[in-house]
Each structure stands twice: as C-alpha cells, then as structure tokens.
Length: 146
Image (tube, rainbow, N blue to C red; front, side):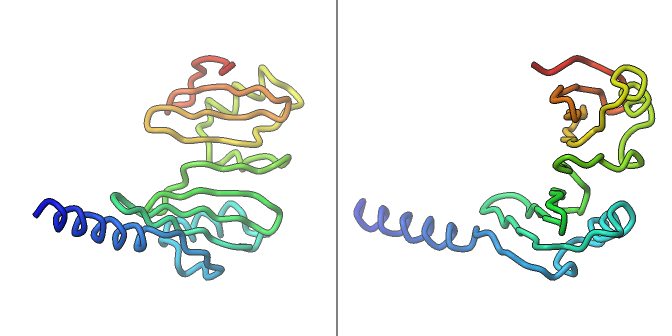
C-alpha cells in the first residue's frame, strides 16, 4: 500500500511540474491589459523582443518582458509592474512617486535611476553611479542599501 501511495504522489508531482513551465512568447496579447498599457504608455519607442510567461505550480502567473533595447520589465498576474531594469538608460520618472524622483534629483545630481524593484511596502532603486537606495511607497527616503 505504501508503495502505491509513493507512486501516486510521484505521478502527481510529475504532472504538476510539467504544467508549471515557462512559456516564451512574442505576442503582446499574451500579457494582461494593464501590462500592455504600461508598455505602450511608458516605452512607446521600444518593441517587445520576447515575453517569458512564468506559470507557477502554485500561485499566479508572472511575466518578464524583454524590450528591443534590452530593458526588462516584470509584471505580476494582474499586469502591475514589479521590477524594471533599464541597463544604462533612465527609468521613466512618471512610473515613480514624485517625492522619490525629487530626492534623487536633489541629492544625486547627474545620476539616473536605472533600475527599480517595487515591493509591497517600498521601492528599491539602483542609480547609475552604482548606489542602491530604499524608499517607502510614498517615495520618502529610508536608507542606502549596502
């Protein structure tokens, strides 16, 4: 009996993991509507190179979009952006809280925000000078991340 139970569990896990695979697409229609809107509004001159659709075994699907210039934008299952990596280019400021943008302009003149990771209660940003800063969701500075 124990042997049969082990076989059944192994089969279930095998089938479940087969369904939890990443899918690669170039079809923007595979993204949630709000993700498509974000790409059109904030990255209008960049085309989608490919989309990695991360279908999780348990939980929701995530989307990793790579644009023609190498920019990476990650979206959650609802199409809300979670992370942006611009390489050496600047993240569109309109995506960030005004207080955060103003703080960086005032305290780090000549730098660009080239990456941002939006967490539940904070923003973690990467500057073009290599510094990583943390801000609360309202855009108030918290600390330098070392």
